[in-house]
Length: 614
Image (cartoon, rainbow, N blue to C red; front, side, top):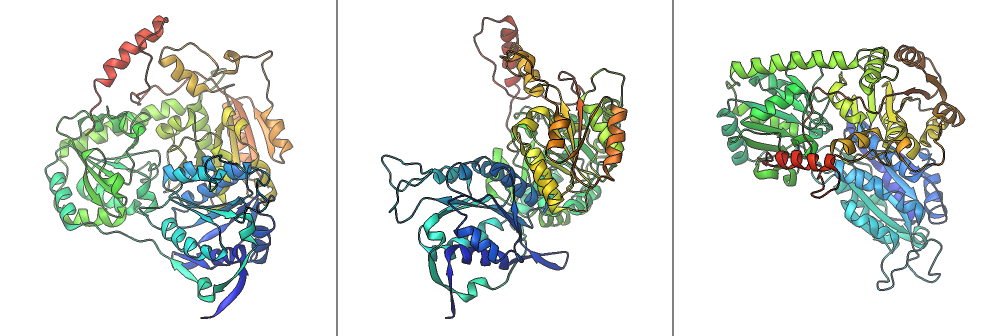
């Protein structure tokens, strides 16, 4: 057997550079690059190794470990899990800064390879700088925090262990069902240790998506349920996009006259203009989708985790006879809530299920009700997004301005707070993947770093990041990274002077206005944050606009700018789109001195009585 004498880190870097995938007939690198912030735990080992393959596997420098990991996760999501990135940090805070991103990727079923530095395997210099010591367990390090939020975790304590560890890592990262974050904790002394690595370990490997075909019995049972349905509804989740199943979904819906509702992750599965697209579903759902969901007798859930925002905390589906079909590549998701499982790739599963349903269609009256509901909802969307003469515009008005200025082909990126709900309802997605929301983990601070990752994955797209002032203040440093790397973004900052979304939730549950808006928090003086000046200090072109008209003009001008542009606008923290939506289970205290809380508790008890898992 031919071998090559390499350090563990050199073998790792060469292996990553040899991994490929095929997209539209072209073989391209599977890893779009490695994000790295170097420290004493990785600069000598991984730093030297990555330098050696820099022409095959680019290394990118960021300003925050969580930010660069968020960018890597966004890259994978924008690539429909066909490509991914690796992330390396030092030991200590550099490593633990990745834990939030690992959880984000785990919840959203997205691939990312995390390579944090670790303690010395030989333990001679223990305790080393930044080492966490467990008094009762000598094998523990800070990286054990990654175990519950990794699909696969390994600690490399000998150089030859990297060979089986990377093979297992690749099997997880590229598996449609197991897909998620992989953490390989790299002991810093072992990174620099050499071993005789098999030369075949570096052979080019092309990874193609595995398309799981449905079981015949499950397929027959699912088809029988749909054939007996008089009020069927499809719920499209992120799995539709990851499987490249948008065309298959459209063909299935059209052939059988079944209306489609979209989750946050599944939005853009169908273009907003499609006549069977009822829009968003659930807590932030459209009136059209939610009305159908309340009556549906069979719900075909395609590629969705069925989280509480999708199901209205399981109070949305009110038909006592309703049944659920879980078409999902992951059995864990396919069988949720007593569903009839249909374990399959979304594209293949829809195609084969459609063949079994040849000649069957939903009743004409159900289809007509869907069309009428969609028409009424689109009128509500138009009303919510039109510019008004308010002193402070609503989020909906800002969304309307962004869409008018950038057109239907723009890709929007957002995450936590009130904006995701408004975008889920109001954004009119033009193409698959043009709606990029991180709402599985609802991670504040994802937005700007996520936009960076999306733009790197889809460089020809016009990428617009919409972010509230709260998220901006949490994590904004990748604006500087975008400028440094020449990755141009358009960022719209909506300043409502606090956490407006949670303030509204606080009020809705009877709570006093407390500690959410800046004016209601403990302060000696209220801050006046100049977001435009801050963005300019990070290297961006920026402007504070005073109206919706000025915002549209600034966004149109941003197309011609040579680097990231940030537009800031003040918004009203209390206005939200009243049309659509559904109750969400947020527990209200049983006992309180406040009458507002007692009234909210009575409403809560009435609402939970309507919960009924399918």
